[in-house]
Length: 288
Image (cartoon, rainbow, N blue to C red; front, top):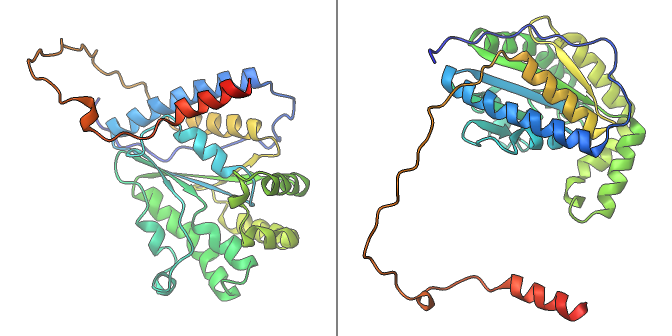
């Protein structure tokens, strides 16, 4: 396929919130797999055309950003579809131009980068928790649209999603994490502090939307009280935005394996992992 320069799509959505009708696991799993298959096609198209795609996932803690990103990347290559989830800045990074450390994670040709939180941390977490002062926040809000225009002008397809979760549902998810040892690590001291600052986060989000929801780089809200609805709606919208094509690969034929007289060393020469499966089956047999 001849490489053409993909353009920033016309990003639009609906002014009517999505349905809250029940979605069965069977329908959800089937549609999710279909969408994931399409993402593998998108991945190959991005490689073939040299497209550069950056997708921002923002929202409150426990809003479902990470789960949606995980479904997108489940069958894609980490060499093409990368996740950027930056930690808190170190002392050196704190002295840089605010956007500087994010620039290093932007996509090159043939790459998709999914930002699990992005430069908008300054307008949200940093502002509410007092890590950035008002002057720094106002400077960010003034520069963000110009910064994003530069990214778009450079050929990056930029898409911004805000995952919106209700206070009651966020609390339910926090409580569930407390009871689940596999998810307890997700509850940071910052998350616990955020529980008492719901209104402050709401004000920060509203101001951020007022100043950064632009025609060229708009915000698209993803209601996420239902994780299944949020994932299907977000993946469907993202795929519809990018005019990708199914890049056909030539058929692959496997040639016969070559024969050889080489004899492998005896198996007892090697060191193997202990047979945990045998122990597991033995315990299960004794308990039955």
